[in-house]
Image 1 (cartoon, rainbow over the protein chains, first blue to last red):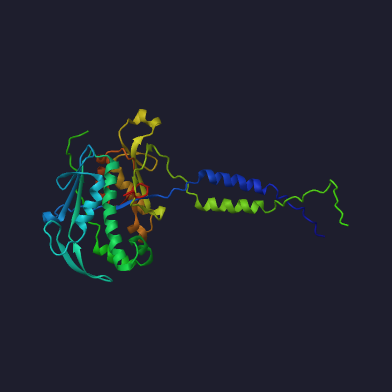
Image 2 (cartoon, each protein chain N blue to C red; image 1 turned 180 degrees about the vertical axis):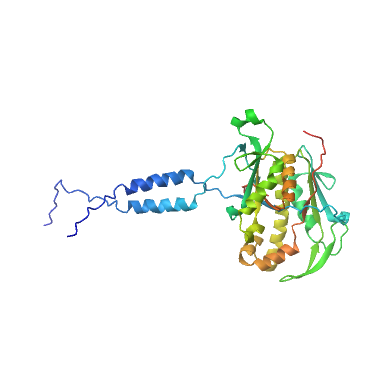
Amino acid sequence: MIRETPEINAGSMADIAFLLLIFFLVTTTMDVDSGIVRKLPPPLPANAPEPPKVNKRNIFTVLINSHDQLLVNGKIGNLDYLRKDVKNFLTPHVPNNPKFPETKQIDIDYIGKYDQSKGIVSMQNDRGTSYKTYIAVQNELAAAVRELRDELSRQYFGMDFKELLKTDKDKAKAIQKAIPMSISEAEPANFGGNK
Amino acid sequence: MAKFRKDGNKKLPAISTASLPDIIFMLLFFFMVTTVMREVTLVVVVHAPEASEVQKLEDKSLVSFIYIGKPTPQLAAKWGEADRIQLNDAFAEVNQIRDFINIKLTKIPEYKRKKHIVSMKVDKDSKMGIVTDVKQELRKANALKINYSTRKVADTK
């Protein structure tokens, strides 16, 4: 004879689940880590050849001193105008204009012949520069490149670069090739003394 | 004629709570899946700066975190007020970074190692001196992809 087993009372199941729920509610952190992505230059070999000389008109220098002041191309700069200046500098100027960097015509898939700017933004900071200012400048430089890419992307493919990255990686690569992220960081100096 | 009965002992039927555990379980599973346990206890204070041009860190298992900031108030008496580096759970010196990166790399399967990325969580009031030292060390360790951790704010310009 099979004895009927008494049914287990499931009334407290909700309480147990609640307990677990509250535990996970408390321990959960919803923040997504995000930040500015940069690539460091590879370490120089000991017998590295001299880096090639770059024409002066192709360089846009941004210096930050230990008091978080900016020197942009030899003049006192301001974070508010930096993006516009960098954008202006990196926009390819054809025909040849000696006030702006040289251009080089290259062939890019999907775009065709394109005059790529040879401009390089060179940034250098002091050891006493605050991280906040450094990030603010990096952000402006990144924003300038992003805006240029957006403009080109809208012109050729009718959408923002961010959208393009999601929909068509090859076309996004073409845009990246046309407008490279040409930001170089010099080794920090000690201008303005220690603070 | 219609008859309106008004006897007091007619109660509302009780709402069945039998499906309550199921609802709670659903919520529970949601939080279980989305939860990320805090892996390290911070010994430095990090208030990230703000930026608008940010990218998300996709796969946490490929990321090494380096924290830089002032020691927490409890530890300040012993460790001083200067900016310090934290690796894993403890204070570290610049020369320990290379080992830290190499240990992390051994935990990543080989075909994914190229995607390894270092997230620098630096306090906004830190000085660039220490950050630069860390960056130079990362170059030597061949960990070239870095991410400056920032809080995302809307672009105001």
